[in-house]
Length: 117
Image (cartoon, rainbow, N blue to C red; front, side, top):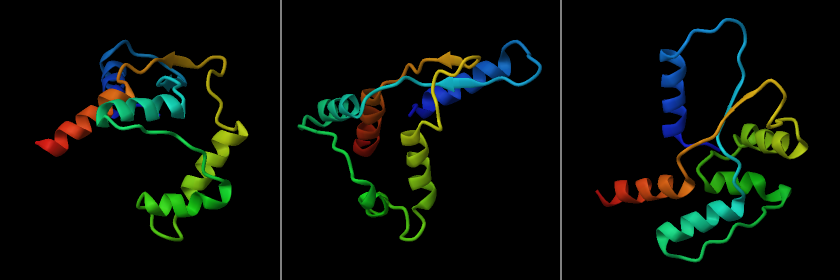
């Protein structure tokens, strides 16, 4: 995952930077574990937050709890299956990697501040 602020900043950089021709593959973001994200959420909320795996059989129900309508969870399930199967590989030769600069902690804190406003 990558913060939308990082996506916007990189797109702006690409659109205003030097021109290029031909295909260009950019991998934006930084790899963080579920435990790291849970820890950062816990810091912002001042709660003990733990990550846990959801068995495959429970994915549809979990996505529905996140707001995806019943019967429409298939695309999200396919995306996670692709990642788990290695079909979406990170660090492929020839790919430009640009690290994200916005931490999950910063995203959670901004969301918390927006709710308070």
